[in-house]
Image (tube, rainbow, N blue to C red; front, top):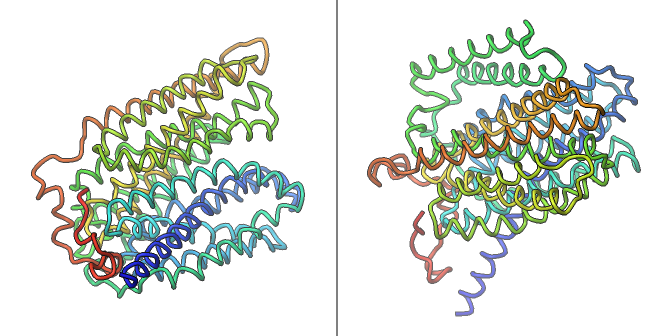
Length: 506
């Protein structure tokens, strides 16, 4: 009996440390994106950069991140979760140090690119590790914890970035993250079981990797370039055409090669397909609340940056509660019903924001909308994260989350560029008497567009569903695969964990 209690305590201790490792990894990625945005003006002054050079501080990070997520997922399937996660954290740390100590702009950009590449390896790998947990309750708990980490990273990034940049200087925006990332990298070998390279995962498919990275990077670059140029400019259209050509070449190659980077069968898994197709609506709701919302509070309602950040703090608090709510709901109801409901809640929050204008008090409009958006986006995020990997075979979990994260990332880029363009176009054509009134009109329309997309996403989740065909078809990809070391290392052992002797039902 004493041995069983000791083993149970050790297992809980290990689960707690694993949660800390995976949440830290995802927190750093979300936090880095926002904290660097706040430091950009200081970086620009330090290196005497023009507008184009300043934009490249962000682009140098976003291009490898968006382009390499699929590669990062396949690497984790092929070479093992532990070494790929450690490699990703190592690249991220190297990039932080290089950016923080850079004496010249080109070294800063190199460091940012290494950060993006490291994040592209670490993010899909961390989600694959979570999805490989033997207990569905443990998977849901970890996904909820990761959602909390992302919410806190988003909520705290702007405030902490401003405090650090003003108090210590922009270099510490990078350097202060180094000890946290280093601690995670040192903990990973102790918390993750070694996994031998998987021959079933296939090779890396170098031509497929090159074509997919080229297509994704061109797409992200084309979208981000619309922020400073006409969306139908020749340069933008040319980039989009090249991206389409690269993707066409990629899919043709994948159909012919014997070791594809992305096996077509993965899209026949209903839960994965529905999650990938409908999750972008949740990303529009999230970006509509965070990115557009912060601009709305400052430019339309006249809030200071610090006041705007504090006004958003209830959203971060609701994320803590909402993750627990999502975990409990997933134990009782189908994920499609939960995800659809979450989208409708987010749409209600965005609709409430659209009613606010100059002179609106915080309580009637802003606070309730923050509460609704925090609840809707986090419950939706947890539901989609769980669904994306629950029925995928063990050897495809990494690349599956690579696809999922790529879709989420591209959706986020589209949301920022698209909603920003909608707000700007409406403000320019509003003919309002004051700049604040014009800005308000633009942001209100952006909120309504985001709300409509969120509602459409909820309807699509309900229509696409999760289980066409027999249960055998639903789990065909998982039932035929042998468990990986990631999965087998987390299986409950009756001798050390009495009472848990079989897999929990999805």
